[in-house]
Image (cartoon, rainbow, N blue to C red; front, side, top):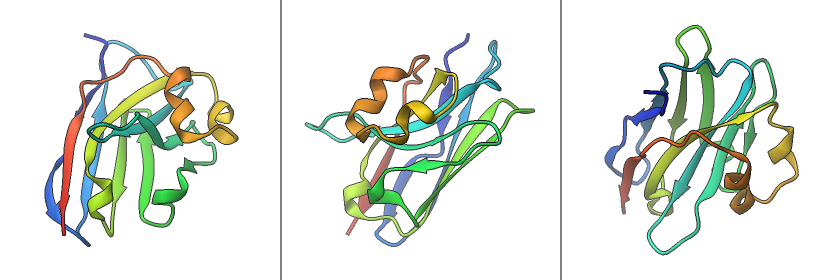
Length: 130
C-alpha cells in the first residue's frame, strides 16, 4: 500500500481548529514536495499548502496566517494545523506528493497545483458550520 492516508477531518464551528494528518507507508517521501489540497462540492480541486524538506512552506492566500503545514520525514507523515476555520474552508482535504522541490507551485495558481502531484490519498472531510 503506497497510497497516503489522510485523517483528522471532522465537523467544527467557525473559529474552531482541526489538525489533519497524512501518513504514508511503502514509499519514502523525503525527497518529494508534499502538499495539501481541498475540493468543495462543485468546485475545482485547489492547492492549500506545500512543503519540501527543509524548505519554505507555500500557502494559498486564503489560508495564510491560519493554516500551518509541517512534515516529519522520520515518520513519513505530514500535518496541517488549521485554526480560525471558516465555513468556506469546508471541503474534502487530500494530501499528495510531487517528485522534487516545491518550487513548481511557488508561482503557480492554486487550481493548477494538482497537475504536478501524484500519489493521492482518498481524502478526509472537513465541515465548518457558521
